Structures are given as structure tokens and as C-alpha cells.
Length: 424
Image 1 (cartoon, rainbow, N blue to C red):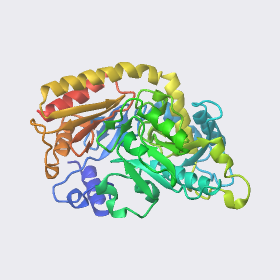
Image 2: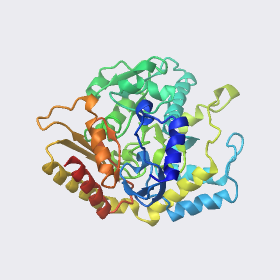
Image 3: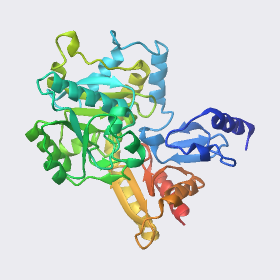
Image 4: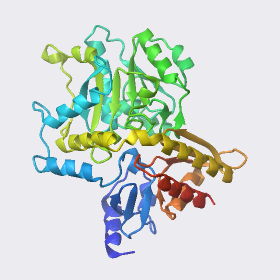
């Protein structure tokens, strides 16, 4: 191990606190985390010069690859002007342009307003608070609760966490946020009384943290219809599924559904900078007009930060310039075929779950029984794949494969070969 690597690890273990990490093991004797120092396209390099395919898009964020010259240039050009200005009482050209671009992906008189924030959790938090305040200001204050789906994940801020259905993440905070009812299906949803429900929240087409589980076909359209019939707001969490992951720019477009709130983050800036957006309708926006007490008193210091907006606009331009969505069907099909062949070779692969360029590879014993959680088998396979040039993370024993959209057919084959060797 080179001295710069050793120093970085020692400093990290002495002072850093990592998310979703067993810090006792992380700081334990003999643990040597990767120190990532460089990226180009779908590749990352560590401080020892080893190259890896970025198999989970740097936690589901990167779209067009690392160090893309167009995004780098856009950020650099904005940096020459000003790095950050307040969006509280001021505006700037890139925020206005980005808001217009985002609304322009939907029909007129639908999603017309954009509230910028910092990340996926805060995008959801904005939608929840807007939905509750809207009810208060339109004579329906009793509708202050929400419905979320079992085993879902929508972020870690207190309101977003109250939606969470994953016990190991959220159980200790249960009851501290919004009142929430959890259901597992449309059939369960239809049994609920709706008198106190402000909105229903869902990750469209596929749940992420729930081991990459797709929803039934046409379920999203059914949910939109139910919301219309019951006067309930539909809140779509497209933090993971947005910006091409499912094969269309937004997952909701696959079933021609327009929500009342659309929450975006992660891929919004191409995976470069923290920026989030909550899109909503003119009708909801209009309920906040009038006297000062009707305003939406919520915000962040870096809301609509110019560097993030520059990156986001450059990323949207690349979707057009590089025909990103047009190239996806062939890659999605190749990934599906490669995963099927991998499953045929390995009896430990229980199920492949794929939605667009998102895949979950669930591992079980050959008899179909799950591995004991204490064995952390999925984690072991990901560590083994690292030795063959692939970086990704498991969700329990489901290996996530979600590379940047720029990933080539040859790079998909590299990822599958790494998993093949790791499983072997």
C-alpha cells in the first residue's frame, strides 16, 4: 500500500463517519477501504491505480459518466462567474432555465412549478409539507396523513423517514413524523378510508431499497385513477428512477401518468452535484398565494445553487446530443440476455429483477432458502467482484447492477464476467 493511501485511510478511520456503515468494522484492524481518486466514463480508479466499472453509478447518481467534458465545461464556465447566490429573494438565469426545461417534459397546465432543494430526502420532504399545507389552506385540514407502500424507502429526513417501510432503518423513529399507513398492493389501498389521507407516495415501476422489486404492469395508471377518484394527491419518488434509468426520461412516462408532485434528485445533475427538484401543479401552487401566512416557509441555503443548475442543464443537453435514450433499448436487451445466461450458469441466483437499465440479482441457496442474514453473502460476492474490476453494493443478498447510461455493451460484459467469477 502506498503511503498516500495509508494516510487517507488512517485519517478517515480517525475522523469520518460513513452512512449505512458498521463503523466498528470499518475502523477495525486490517480493514482497508478503497480510496477512490479518479473517474472517466463508466470507470473509477483507486489510489493504488486499480480500475473498476462503476456498477452502481456511484450510489445511483451518475448518468453520462465521470469527468464528462461537457458537464465539466458547464460547471467551469459558471464557476468563472459566481459559485453560489441565494435563491431567497433573488434568482439567477440557470435556475429559471432549468425549471422551464423540467416543466417542459410534461403537457401544458400539468406540472408547472419547480421547488429546488438539495437531495432526494428533501425533495420528498417538500412534497409532503406542501401537500399538508395545501389541505390546510383549501379547507380540508383533516387530510394530513399519507399512504406509503410496504418495504419502501423515500429518504432519511424525518418526514421522508416516516414513509419508510424498512424496519432496520426506520423502526426506532416510528411515530416521530407524519401519520402514515402502509399497504402492500392496490387491493389493500382500496380498503382504506380516505378521510384523513393527503397523499400517496410511491417509487414508480420499481422499488429500489426493497431489493429492486418491480411493480405489476399498469399499477401506476391504476394508482393515478384511484387518486383521482378519492381526491388524493399522487406523489412520485423518481429520485432513483428518473433520468433514463427505466428506459424513458421519467418512469411515470412509461404509463402516461402525471403526478401531483414529482420528486427528482440523484441523476438531475448527471451525478455531479447535490440538487433536487419537486415539481407540482399550478392548482397546488395557487393555494399558496395571497397573505404572508400562506407562503411556503421551507428552504435550504444551497437551493438552486448555480453550479448544480449548470450541471443539470448540461446533462439534459447530453440526453439530446448523445441520443442517450435512443441507445438504451439495445443495452437493456443485452443486459437482460447476459443476466439470463449468468443465472443459467449459477444455481445461487434465485431471481433476476430488471426494469430498464436497473437490475437486482437475488442470491439464495440452491434449494431456494435464503442465506442467514448474519452470513452477509451478498456483501461477500460484491467484495469478490471488486477483485475482478466491478464496484457495486448489495441490498441484503440482492446484488444491484445499475451502471451509468453511457456504459457500453463491452462494459456490460465486463460487469457480468466479474460477477460470474465472483460467484464461481
